[in-house]
Length: 550
Ligand code: FBP
Image 1 (cartoon, helix red, strand yellow):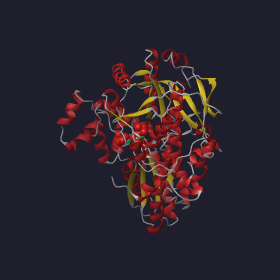
Image 2 (spheres, rainbow, N blue to C red):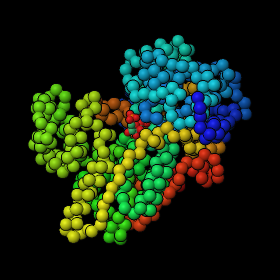
Image 3 (tube, protein in one colour):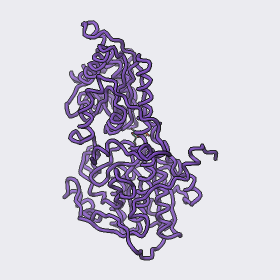
Image 4 (cartoon, rainbow, N blue to C red):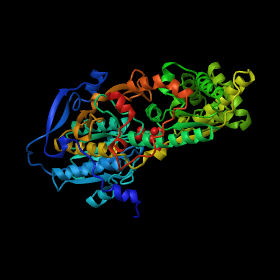
């Protein structure tokens, strides 16, 4: 396989570990834990894994002799930079426990466990993937491990391979399922432990004990580089407004972090829109106001960041989407009627079959977007919100608003747009030093939790704005992060998703600055991720973490 010069050099990088993991390690039990909410229900659902103590690892003088451990690892869900380093951390960790330990990778995500598709990860294979982006070492997938039948199939292969433990590297849903699996394996006394690792570029798997999910640092650095480059282009040509949609299924952490790094003119935060119950029209008015103000100063250019999940946070759009899901549900009489219509008559028909409010929202949308809402559905028949080109929707609506303002003599500027979507280009980048170190430490921590016989824990590495040496490694019971939420009509125990906190320091700092960034041109150009060079350039963590831990 030919590799780039950077990859060759980067392979030599030795990720940093917390001091406590470098030699012999001792486990220190902390306080017993409770779930964040719904304690009674969660305790009843997880009798074997509820209430376990927090764990931290500390350096020890001597270590007891350990037996080899066999571990199976699974990558679950969307790619995030650093996954390969979690795996190399597990590998080095279990080899340090005993050279005869073995690591197996299940192929293509959780489905690999159920279908018994796996490979042994030997030293040669691991070495090829150290410090690289991507999940291609074993692949990932979105099969949900939810059914006991799947757990039993998994146990068959775990027994065949004499596995002591499974490590599931995933987001909130995958770790919720990891916890259910841990509970089931404990209940039936299977002897197989389950450990989770916090992954997702979205940054929404975090709490008191999990400071950040891995991949967020690198992905936001990649997007911020690109945003900075576009800002410089905008400030050079002075003729375009760039509307940039940023990945992140639900929460706006990515948009907020990129805004803190690059200081664009407009950044929408979905959580704020929901809190203020803003209408689509109000969001458009806010954006058009900034465009018009800049135009009045002779600045017919700018950059706007739009979070991918925005649409579902606008209350009236949420209602509209839900009405469309019902109206056009597969197999219903109304869907059949809709399909019989000429394409040119469909939007009018839909508007006539919605509630008064939804009908007026639907009719206010640019016709291409309205059509998209009625056509693109997922396998369950729901509108595919992630496919909606929100950046174009807002760009077109801002243009219409500005035309109205022009007619009323309220604005005289020009408004030329360019549209972008940044998502996939950040998910498999070579991990930053932070993610390379953090992921390797998470994997190594998982191996120690396994050798200590723990199950139902998530590997945790804290104090991450300090140098890696001072990071605190340990484990957090997954049940501690859970609450009960309604999913598909039923109450289920799930890990609480972390949205942007409107009382949090990163958001408050952003609010204190966004006025200046809107009118002035205060762009910051972060440039590409640096892997070699001065520590203040290479080892910076996210602005979000810095502000949260200040
Ligand atoms: P995870 O939550 O699984 O980490 O995935 C995050 C994400 O990258 C979202 O930001 C995005 O909406 C989604 O995955 C895209 O999914 P897909 O890779 O299936 O297109």
